[in-house]
Image: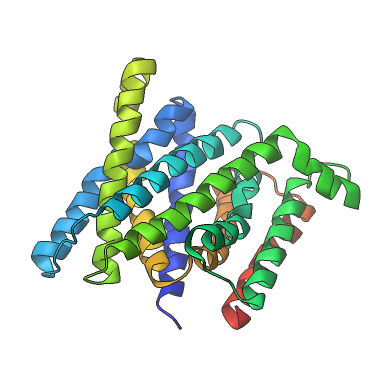
Length: 301
């Protein structure tokens, strides 16, 4: 098994924990605050990781260059926007379905990988992405009239458009992070991923904190009151991001994000057992298709 596969699965599991924690935080603070905690409370853990790798393992810290800074900034800004839209989406539909709308990310990452980096994906990967995206479309119309027309017309709804926009920004961020990590040129994928994470999460923390100081200072107080859950969110969020960055240093962003659809299985488990939300048969079929897409990806992608 290639190394990027278990790294991606672990990152998907951690991201599901982070998303679940953010949904809880959304009940005690606004969307901006719930978006900030993954960055602001993850920042110390990112720095500790770089320090551990440098002083503990002896890896050199790669120097930033203009290309790295540009890609890191692009990824950081688009990820903020994507996260904000995804958390906002939780206000309209249940946890599993809300997350599903953004799952067009792998297909969009493939397009952006081609446009930005000239990367091409195999036919098997395209098929795997198509199966998973179709599963997501089924989930998106699970509570609508069950016909083929509704399967596609639902994409014009407000919820679908917000989710697709979130997926677009996540797709751009994924490709940008891969480009940033690769531009460091060494010493190895672990240190490149950790360094990219530290720079990006520092940038995101500053941007969002300044925004809250200017636009919503009361949100800072609400974040402080929920510091325990926010700290957990930061830890699992930073750990998940490190996993993504490491996997995307080893493999194309579109391929990594296609396998990352396995998070939907974790999301459904959270919805049923943690949030006590009801999942319809159509949503279950959609989830199975997402899983099938993952199997195809691993076997023939």
